[in-house]
Amino acid sequence: MTLRLQDVTKKFGSFTAVNQLSLEIPERQIFGFLGANGAGKTTTFRMILGLIDQTRGDISWNNGNIGYGESHLIGYLPEERGLYPKMKVKDQLVYLAKLRGMKKAEALKELEQWLERFKVPEYKNKKVEELSKGNQQKIQFISAVLHKPKLLILDEPFSGLDPVNVEMLKEAVVDLKEAGTSIVFSSHRMEHVEELCESLCILHHGSPVVHGKLKEIKKSFGKKNIRIHADFDLSFLKDASGVMKYKPLSNGCELQIEREEIAQSIFEKLQGKGFVRTFDLEEPTLNDIFIEKVGAAYE
Ligand code: ATP
Image 1 (cartoon, rainbow, N blue to C red):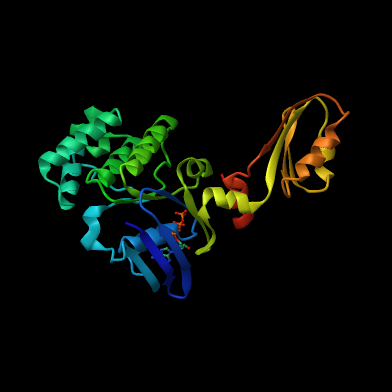
Image 2: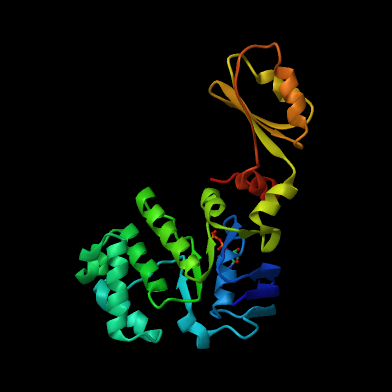
């Protein structure tokens, strides 16, 4: 069950929101979708779901169409959360699950398991409006996964959640992947994408600027980071050749270097200057890559 986007473009009037996007999202993978505000992530999700039509290009799933006819196989957590505030959690989730072809008894069983898992069994008979925003989000997540979709699209699933709930949802996402669901999620948090995704795409003004496997993206970026802790002033490294960025840390500094070999000459420059506590050569972070490709400071 591969989701494939080929040369997909979406225009709103003369404005191009998504520009010639080609992607492939294989089965049993978590695919990360990154981009600054307004980059075109939500628009892409809406096209995949058939909520809006693309202006050009093809979207296929397992070589067939994808749209309303497949909705029982798809789960979606939209960016604008929306549950019926006056309805009980149980009634609402069972109703939505039935729309996706589930039997009531089965939906209830699944629902109880999810509420247990998220440590909120007592919410079953509460009205949605009685829950906090973060807890409403957990309920909406359950509504996206209750019918065991094959393809799960999550628009900023972790935003607004406390750290305990973020971990709980992350674990659920990983388990769903292992059970065979293909998952696409957007996020502004690089560390979540680094932790969860094998592959990713960074959109910039509607165009893909980075796309591929996380490991290969890091490798081809070339630049590395060095983190040094020492008992003497390291600011002289700022001007060393091959040093692209210098960031002071307490008791040390972090450097971005042009390529791995520069680490050797930096190491030599430290000799005889004093006591060096740590010298770590590290892979670039996704944040480094994002900032370079998109050129924007990012939370
Ligand atoms: P965010 O991170 O802020 O959620 P995003 O990457 O999801 O952003 P989109 O919501 O896809 O961004 O929007 C992409 C661009 O398309 C934006 O400039 C937005 O204003 C524009 N856009 C989206 N929907 C419409 C619409 N229905 N009519 C006109 N322009 C639209």
